[in-house]
Image (cartoon, rainbow over all chains, first blue to last red; front, side, top):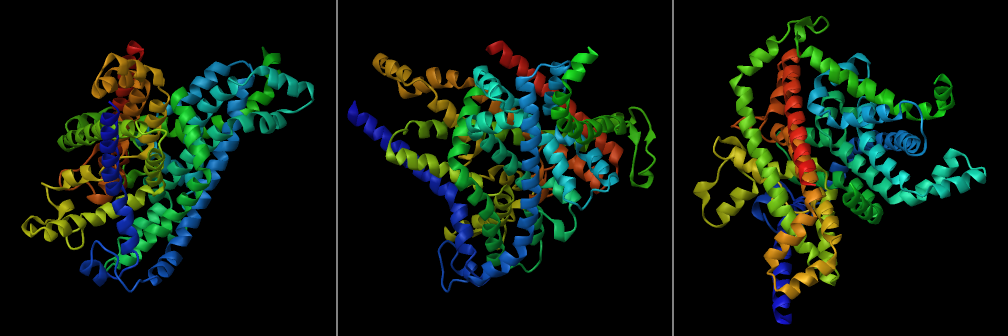
Length: 274
Length: 292
């Protein structure tokens, strides 16, 4: 019996190693190719080859860094907006009774049913008419509008589960709502807030169609649109292209590595509850 | 009543930004979309759409290309469900079997890391892999001496669709992985121990204990997969732009509006897709409620 489980464990590990090798192969390929010239790529396709061309990175960095900056602004401001408006609304819905509360709440969550394919064309026209085209706001407003819904739904449930004694005690001590939120709700809900915001950030960072339509000026392009245009050029230097891919991946890697623990445990709580 | 509303004025103020953003950037476009789907609205009468009733829908109903694109979409959605349940879920189950061991923790983390690679980077290196000159598939074929099978993978009717379905191979990790992992780890371990005493095989355990217990997550992820699958067309747009039998309805709509300048007709496509998604959602919700 013992030996049998050991063998089956060995098989499971072997399967994982194969899947992981296949999963990581493109990343490996991207990194080694980013250090090569076109000739080196065709001569030595699967392995590292020398000399190493770090200058691909200098060139790619200056091309991609502006797109990255745009993405940081668009996704960053959107996420801050989702956080502020989402926390406000979730807190109000969780803690207060007021006329029309349920109707307004149903109104808000019903937008989860509205797919982006329905709104794409008129939303583009709207943004155009408001004169927001080729400004960051063209992306930021719609991202906050759609991103906040799930945030409110999950955070509201979470706040409702906090024992009301805690709130009462804080009120007796004379704490205002903002202080209650910062000192009681936030420490308890930190992980779930962080993971919801990261998912939001990831969504807007990876979005392609909408910024492709609304941010057409090269100086405003986000990283997805910028990379797409970047690879469209003729006579492409692949090393330079792959270096650009690596540089474009860095911000998300930093952001997620820093928040990995909160992210994973937040998702865990959300997955089991939601 | 008025007094109550007045007393709660701070509550309304708290949800005002949320409601305002939703009304302006989602409700208005959604209603506008439904109205414009009943208009003759093209680039030349951009500022003066003309109401024409259900003409767009009648035309759409007879649009063979549009309905054909649903066949392609069905293939993509089916593949999405297959990779989610047959690959992602099983792979995650095998990760959960190693919980507690050192190598198990290493493997668990190793599957999370690729989430951080931007989708556009993934799409673009896959596009590179399919290239004729420098692509990886042709490189492998040349390596093993099967050069005669080398082809422009994204540029023929026979290979384009299959190539697109292959993107993301081996389909492990990702968002589904995190949710499944949480679900598997939440299962009470004593159930498995009881099953061991009964002498049940590993596969039976998986089918009779684990699957029923993670049904909520399976349903949620399948539903998300279907709803997102119906809407998504980034890959098709970047890889083939809908040529070589890879056109999906979302991309058809996009091109009708932004390349063809026929906004009214595109809105009718959007409304049709919305209705389909709505039907799928209601159908799945009913199904879920019945089971639980």
